[in-house]
Image (cartoon, rainbow, N blue to C red; front, side):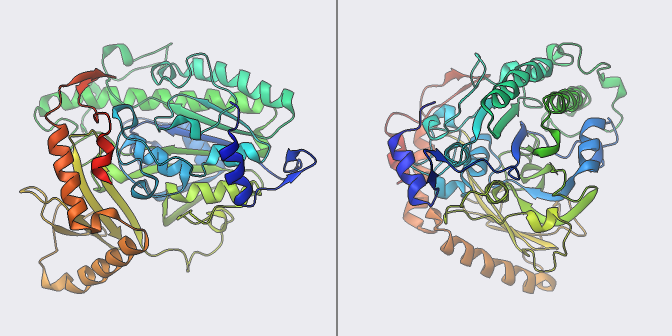
Length: 468
């Protein structure tokens, strides 16, 4: 894809240098970047304690690299999470506060990971969904004929075959690469047809094999065993796919000079999961393998964010980071250094999912407590919730009114207010918060249309002006 003059001007302004007609001379120390996402994947990997299945390929990647025990997305909704990952900015900052295919879009003209790396001489490729608009802000040199459609990536053998072609093109060009691989699994719909695709997983689970179902269906628990089996079948397929993909990386001769990053784009789709700021929605697996630079076999307990990945990647690639980034480079943790001065506080947010699902939440956690602000409280979600993650990791007991935890609440409320002010949270403005509420109520009255796998409402033409 041709780089637009506006992007080039922006990159120059950010300090990306030009030398001899090319951007950044070749540097043998700069790694390739393989960034992999799994759609709606929670902590259902055996390296994270999952007992119902084994994920040997991802376990091996963890053993060869670094496993982050407490990794969080910026927002537990696909487009918002991905936009934050690729811009290094909060959804309320970059503008992608809801699903892209339903009319939400980020602000134009922002530096993005693919654009910065392309300008630095990297060959860029994508397979699977981008799910962020405007797509022109993400200049990929290569994509398969199916472009960014998600469905084909359920066939992980096909993903590996297509990836072979991209890796060959990077080798032929003699350039470092940034390759963004996006698997659809374990996103729904999951059904009989998805239990096994192209022979994977080799031995699909059935409902009878599930003794401890995941509470995926709140209205009909009798369906949970089958739903759990199908979700875990898709996770086993991802694991097999990662093995095939890394085999292609090795066969192409790139394994030793590639930073491989594997993350879930948000947590599991279930009650108090995806589309909420509770732990099941915002906490995801994150593995990183970087031979020679990341100390192998580490399990890091620090709180990290997918917002940390852009500064980490840019630092590794020798690219000047924009001053708009809000995350921190992970290199000290990757090297195995002491983390005594690593961040104590970790924030997340929720805005829209679909146009009619407006769930404005803001959270902050320290090493023990988590505060949840519900900006549109209801009977199920009071305005303030406080959880003791050390003793109550499933967030079952709200301690916000407990005098014994008043100091923890005050500390986190003060931190939250400071963060919202520093990061320019638009919903600090009561009038704007009301406009967002009114917009969601108005959009809910729009006719439903077919989009993807369900009947949904879209943001009407010009509707985003209501959020300004």
